[in-house]
Length: 335
Image 1 (cartoon, helix red, strand yellow):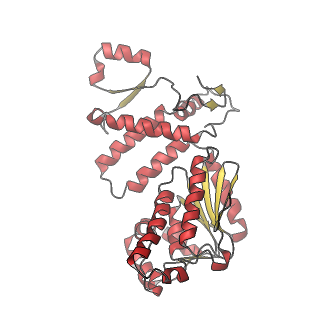
Image 2 (tube, rainbow, N blue to C red):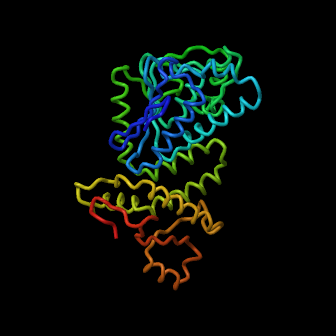
Image 3 (tube, rainbow, N blue to C red):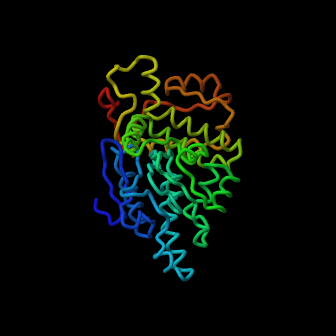
C-alpha cells in the first residue's frame, strides 16, 4: 500500500502503521490523518490482522501538529474541516475493533500525546519525552486530548500537564499512567511485536467487546454497564471461540490445536455484534442480574415443557456457525 505520509505493512497477524514524515518529526497534518484512516481501514478489513502496532520512523514519534499548516487555518471553515478529518481517525483508533499498541520514542508532543494515549497499550523508549505543549502556541489540546489525558493520569494531573506544558520523561510517564512499559530504545519494537503476537493469539471477539465497554465505563452507570456486560458475555459464550476455549479447558481438544482460530476475524466480529443486537432486542427479558442459561435446542424443549422458561433466560446454543458460513478450526471444518 502506497501512502504519502504513513507506511503500512503486515507481519504475520500484526498490522504495523508507521508515521513517516521524518523531516517534519512526524508532525500531524491533515494528510497524515487521511493516511492513518486508510491504513486502519486496511487493517480492519484484513482478516489475518489481529492486532495493530502504531510507531514512527525517524528521530521522534510525533512533534505535535504541523505548525505551517495550522497557520493556514485562518477561518472557521478551514479549522472545522481539519479537525473533522482528525476526529474521524481518532474515533476510529480509540474504538478500533482490534487491539492496538502505540510504540513511541523521542519527542511525544501536542497531538502526538493524543495519538500515544489512543492505543489500548502504550510502550515507550527510555528516551521518550511527553509534553502537552498546546499552551505554548496559544491553543488547547485537540485530537480527543481532553478525553484521553484525564483517563490516563487523572483530572488534576491532566490540568497540570496542560497548564505547565512541562516535559515528562519516560520513567515518570509510567508512574503517571501515560504508558504501560518503558524499554531501551533498541529493544522497543521487538518488545512491541512480542506483545502484539501474544495478543493476536487470543479471542479477538472478547477483546473487542471488553474494550468498548471499558471505553464507556467512565460515563456509564453501574446498572447499564452490568446489562451491557451480560449481553457481551452471552455473545462471547455463544461465539465459536467460547465453545473451543471451554472444550480445551476440559481436555477435549488436541494439544496441538490453537486455542483460538486465526483468521476470518471479520465473520467472528460480525457474529459477536449480531448476538449483542439479538440479546439487546430481548429487552427486559435479559436482566443484568438474572442468570443466563446456555442450553442446546434439545434441552430447550424439556425446559419449556416444564415451564421453567419464566425463571431463566434461555439462550439457544446450537453450535451454529457465524455469518458467512462455516469456519475453519484447528480440527478442520466446523459443522
